[in-house]
Length: 389
Image (cartoon, rainbow, N blue to C red; front, side):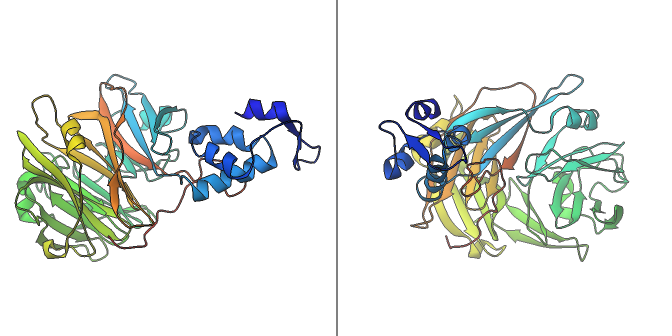
């Protein structure tokens, strides 16, 4: 498209308006055409001329807004445990291999620990030798700290403000498998807090827990029961449990935050016969406060099931009023749902299918927003928090 435009016009010497030499696209027609161009291809398109740059910006603002990207990180199970990254752009419906991402630096840091993700944006690795973590959306920057005092295999981890909470997941020979330690990222110090509640003794690993965090607290839900506990790192204390199962047909549930709202995704039926997938949202941590957001369409539920109609677990990533959902048994399939600005209704988009890799998977976020008037991509957009369900 850019090449075709250059045949008909060119920029003047001072970068001003293009000199027309034939029929070219202008105005609404150009903006509509650009709305169907993959986001990554809009960068060269915006450099064709000043008018094209303005048309790219207008198209992104008014016709097809950028949506949060999903980053999928793959860590090889074999030394040197190389990490590669792919991104999905739901606006363009394309997968891309990323040269940027955790890469070799993260692999070196995590050589003795698996790469893990927590509440959408946080990547981390914890071992007896060190703790490494990255809240950076592209995970280009990593921070390192001394390890927690307890040897943990699969803890629940969350970044709450400037505090990194590491809870449970301790080895069997540790004195307290429910111990909680908090790392102050500003002071660079560890502190011990109240242990996790006793009911979590047999499910204190992140395998059994869904973790979410806002700016003040960490939320931990038992995926199989819906029992939810809340940890306040400022007070060093736990609260709850809260029952977040508004529907008794839910057999598996996970949580996350959409702005200031807690969102729960639940599987209905049983693991051998999935009946449906439903989303709820609430401003409070109580089942009575949960409002139904939407149901996953039946045709997408069928795709989510495996060959035996089974779905035992799911994962979810959120950014603003946008979420991705996937089955842990079919990580190559990703589904997304967003809240429409005009109507306030939530709708599901088409599935995103990628090639399947062997090894470990972790997920994070990138949210692109072209800079107004420049056509540059890859800048972070602040997630929206306004509106109601």
